[in-house]
Every structure is written in C-alpha cells, then in structure tokens.
Amino acid sequence: MSESHQASRTQAQISRSAIQRLYISMRHLILRGAYKPLGVSGETMIQAMLSLKPEIYGTIADDERVELDGLLYIFQRLPKGIEQCRYIKLISREGYDHSHFEKHVPPRRKRDCYRVDEEQMFIEMTRGGSDIYDILTHLTFMYIEAEKIRRNSMDAKGRKNRSWLMLEELVNEINLGNEINREVGFTYLNTILGRTFDEIEAIYQRFEKSSEVNNLFEITYWLGRLSMDEFLTQVDREITFSPALRESLGHHIYGEKWANSIKKTLWDNQLFDKPIHIISANLHSVMNCFYARHSLAKKVKYENLEQFAEILSMSENGEMRKTVHKFALGNGMFEISDTSGTNIGVQIFDTSKLDIKNLPTELNIKKQEKDMPVIIVMDYAFGEQAYETMDELLKPYVLNGERHLMNISSINIMGKAGILEGDKGDIMIPTSHVFEGTADNYPFENELNKNHFADSGLGVYEGTMISVLGTSLQNKDILTYFLKSSWKAIGLEMEGAHYQKAIQAASKIRNNIRKDVKLRYAYYASDNPLETGSTLASGSLGLDGVKPTYLITLAMLQGCFDQ
Image 1 (cartoon, rainbow, N blue to C red):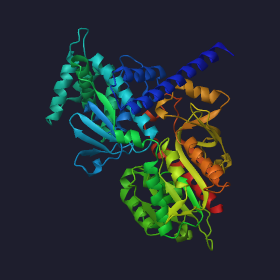
Image 2 (cartoon, helix red, strand yellow):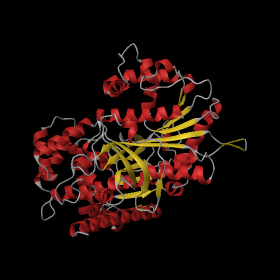
Image 3 (cartoon, rainbow, N blue to C red):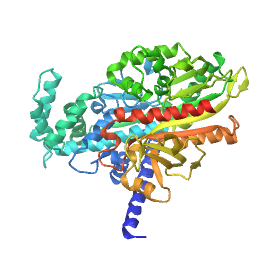
Image 4 (tube, rainbow, N blue to C red):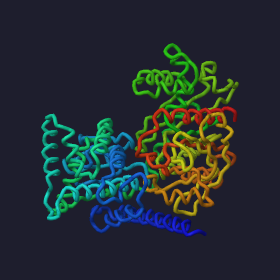
C-alpha cells in the first residue's frame, strides 16, 4: 500500500471518527435536555466539526474567512430570524399550532417554528432523529461562523473595531426603513467576513433572492452581536430539548397516525384490496404524467412529457399547475393533507379512472378489464424517518379488532442523491445500500437497471449506494474512500438503508407483505460533493433536474403497469 493511499485512508478514518463523536455527543445532549453551544459539550461538537471539515460548509476551518455559501444553505433550512435568538428550543408537536405566536416555515426544510419572543425560537421536530441531528449540525456551524465574525470585529484589546461600529449604524438605518448605500456596507463586511468585495456582492444578491431569509447585513450583525454579548458580558446562548420531544423520539407516534390516514382513505374508497404500488417521490411528477397532457391540451401544444414538465416547473406558470391539480382531483386522484406532523404529503391514484388515450405517448399503458392498480405517492422522507413511515405503512390495517393486509405489489423509491463519479442530473441505480458507520448492509434485486435509461443521453451509474448519517457531514476523504475502496460506491443519500430495513422486516420476518414484492430504486444527482462548486450549497438543480426526474418516474410507472 502506497504512503499516499495510507495517509488518505488514515484521514478518512479520522473523519469517520469525528462523525461518530458528533452523533454520540448529540444523542447525549438530547438525553440531557440542554446545552450551551460554547460550553464544554458544545465545544466538543465544534471541535469534531472542525476536524471533519464537511464539504458543504466550505471554509469552516478557516480562522478568518466566513463561509458564505454554507450560511445561505443553513438559513434556507432554519427559521427566519433564528440568528437573532439567544435561546433555541427543540420541541415535539405540543399545541403551539393553536397559539398566536409568529410562525415560520423554512423554505427548504418544512418544519413549523415559533418566534416566542425577541430572544427565543421554538422549532418543531416531528421527522425523527435525523431531523434533530441535521438541525444541530447547522446550528453548530452557525456558532462557528458567529465566532469568526466576532473575532474579525474586535481589536487585540477586545474593543469593537470601526467596521463593526459602522455596520451597527447601517443596520439601525435598515430598521428605520431608510435607504442605505450597499456598496459602502460591503466594505464594512469586507473586514468582518474576511471576504473580497466581489464575493460579498455576489452572495448578497443570492440572499436577496431568497426572500425567506434576512439580508446579509442583518444576519452578520446579529450573529456577531450575540457572540459579543457572550464574550463580553457572559450572557450565554442556549439550546434546550423539551421533555415531550425526548420522550417521543423513536416511538413512531407521527408515522403511525400518518399511515393510518392512508389506509383509511383506501378502505373508505374501496381501493384497499386492489394491487397497490408505493412510490416515494415528489408530489408532482406522477400527477403530471397522468393528467398534464389531458388538462392542458388547449393551452400547450403537446410534443413530449419533458416539455410539459419544464413548462410546469417554471415559477410563472403557477396557474397551469393549479389547472393540472384541480383536474387530477376530479379524475381519480385523492390527496391526503398531512395533519400528523410528518410533513410528508400523500397522493393516491385510482388508475381505473384514468383516460388512457390522453396519457403521454411515453407511457405505453393498456386498459385492463379489472384490477387496475392503485398508486400511493408519498413525498420524500428524511433520513431515519424513512424507516418510521415505511414500517408503519406496511403494517396491517386494524379495523374493529381485525387485521387487514394490504396487497402491496411493488415499492418504488426515487430520490435525490450526491453522486461520486458523474455530474448533476445523472442517474444512479443502486444494487445495495450500505448504512454508514454501522455493519448494516442491504443488498436487493432492483427491477430497474442501466438499460432502462440507455437512450437518455445522461450518465447512468449502477452499484452500491451509501446511506449516510447526514449529507452535511461528509468530506472528500470519506467520499473518496467510499468511491475508491472495494465498496465502489456510486453515490450517497440518507433514506435507502432505512427503507430497506422496513421492507425486509415486513416481507421476510413479519409477513405483512408478500416476499416477492418488486423493488425499484433510482436516484438522480442533485450534487457532486467531490467537485468544488458542485455541492448542495452551490444551489439547486433547476431545470436540469426535470429530465432525470421524469425518466425515472416513467420507468417506475411502466414497471407498475407491466407488472
């Protein structure tokens, strides 16, 4: 073994150890109920993060330069104004939805958050352990960057420097509703953020486009101010976990309610005994495949489904999306609004109600005399939540003391994933899922293969997928190890192993579903974390994600009907 390979492997092991320390620390803190980000426990997490240096957090380990893309990434997933809050409390669903507190829902991670007062934010955690780990990781990163801002804003004697004092004046003007000279403000941020004028101007525009987050001046000011308050006057920041959250963790409380509402809808509409196909995907691609052509025939000249999908994905075409949705609800689609707290929406399609002649030509479906399938589409789960939801969904429906097994014919998982060898928008076909940091491996027979996408014009990769503990905790050393070692991994995601754990238990141990249930897994690449500038923090796929999404959807639907 070469010295360079040995060194690389050693660094990968160091990184994996840092991830384990982070997760052990987080579980300990949840059980304890509270911690201070700059206290002993918080410092342990900070040191582990700095040792790990996750790709998504860019320059996290740089003592002076503040990581700007990483900040935008986390603030799109945290409630607006969290940078102003000294006290953050993670809670279960505890009745705050009936309160009059100011409510915030982050744009990129749907969770209910409540601004209780000027200094305190409550954040609902109903999506399982992965959701809590994810938010604690983001918060730890936020506190690391806040400390950089404080250090860059003070001189050697602990006094606030001119750039900080001028930023304070500028933020006061913003609060008064007065116009400010942004370019002058960028020069203050130049010192405080340790970035060039061009870098600050570019990221400022990206913050401005994301209306659900505060502007860069305010975020910088509040991060620095709370850090200074703790440094100068020992007014500590604190994160707490409610007793109800600590008690509910791991008990499938939300998943059970969610699954039972689906089964009740099937039962009430005489769909329970029909062949059922489950698809985990977004809540638009299957609906558009079935109804877009028919409902928009007078508005859009039909060429192909991809063209329809691109038109519908454009922000200015909201009325068209409403037209498709309304038509779907009147022609065989049932929509279940989630009230359980899982934040996973569901659509149920009774395909016997479809107008076959108005389906896309890409779908070669023939009307059957009986037993046209029922398709359940569930929105994306998050990490460990995939096990909770799928485990509960595959259980029998208990009605008046009697157990009724569902007729599950296939389970289809489509997702976004990080690719290790390829580009954004490419397709990955897993043959097994390996759960990071454990000995859990889930090989399976995938009904999809590379041949299904041979003429797509996209890169298509087949092999092992790594189900990671958190996408925001991966770095190049770990990812290169997964790619170059005998694992020969093609990508990383967060749900695959959890889904397989539930499916294998239901089919091979509990006998809740047939043993020969068909499985179809396919992912499209949302990012390449091994390429600088191609991580999740660099921005969304946009229209580049349309083609792989619909290619995978069509392949899965064709498989369901052919079956």
